[in-house]
Length: 148
Image 1 (tube, rainbow, N blue to C red):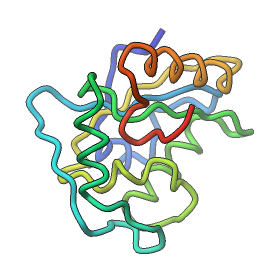
Image 2: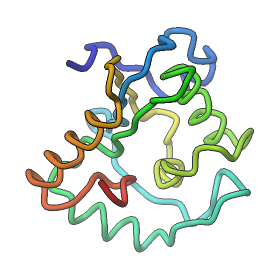
Image 3: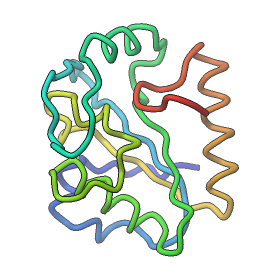
Image 4: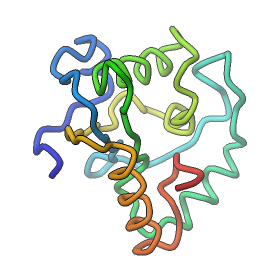
């Protein structure tokens, strides 16, 4: 069960993810109510390849759910806190070790997107299940997930 509290990506970055536990888990990047999704043609992180904005727009237009943009996991030794710190640092061009969600950082105002997480023992299994369920319900993976 996902926690009720959502944090903006900016809040997580500014707090250095101190609210995030060190346990393994999964997380979702969500669109706040009323936010329009517009893709940039420039990369925030200069160390990663850029997706063409048209490709992202086309993929997003095919997603039935316009709320969930990314489903990720943290199954390493240091869990969610370390993984989400990597995610935030990638988005602020301070690191290159989380390219998986790079489509997120091509969204104008990405720092205002929401992140929700939950701790779980088998993050790999839970992530695969959530992606499979999403794909079955929506006919595609979330915008920033390219495979399940």
